Image 1 (cartoon, rainbow, N blue to C red):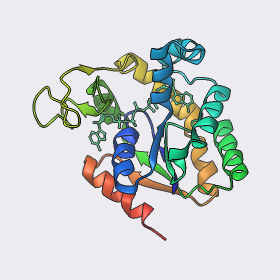
Image 2: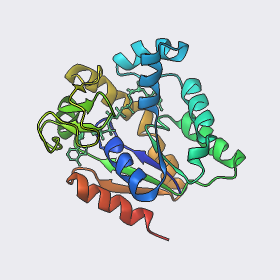
Image 3: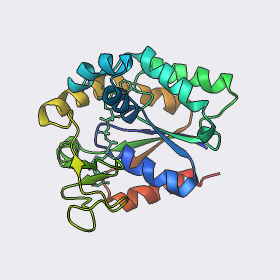
Image 4: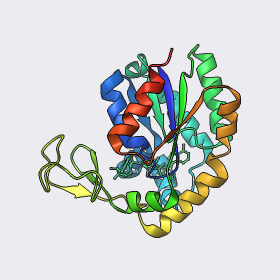
Length: 216
Ligand code: AP5
């Protein structure tokens, strides 16, 4: 099963993709995580992407398209994948279609997660991540069970993303409205788009997505 989670920054794409990975045995392909790994490794792509990401803008399409084309050919994608953060522009959506066609793969579901802008700001500015395993938490909505200890790996060190500031989130939301929202009609016209209420609690959102994935 191959699916896309679509939604603005902070909509909960990463949170839900991790849960779906476990529930359905399909792999999360998060382009933001891939780019942050390239930045941390100091690769040519990372050096080009860093200032763009810090400004809350979108990294050029050719970089992202090549990154995803290479990734979906890896063995762990054979059972299916959850695209989290890709596609983000109409050219990326068209390139994904071509990639899937070439590989005789099908796109099963595109799920749009709708969340109010005020809630997005609160979610993004309250987010923190385990430095060891990358598990994501929130100061109010999703705290570790034991204070200061990661539920997943027991790590005790946490980090915040450089682009999770109130100022950068405005640029990220503007990029979403101008460049990513136009792909919604593209998928609606193909009959694969479902929209869910991303304002619901995390578990309720998982159940709403799961109900869509279980549709014949
Ligand atoms: P990326 O890393 O993809 O960031 P994003 O799309 O801005 O999304 P986020 O990761 O911020 O949010 P999310 O929806 O995953 O929410 P989360 O689950 O963490 O991209 C970063 C940058 O990389 C881009 O700005 C761009 O520069 C570049 N880039 C990446 N892909 C690109 C592409 N294809 N093309 C061009 N450039 C690209 O949740 C947020 C918080 O809310 C968490 O703390 C969570 O615990 C909490 N939360 C989640 N769900 C709920 C809920 N239901 N109720 C309450 N709290 C919740």
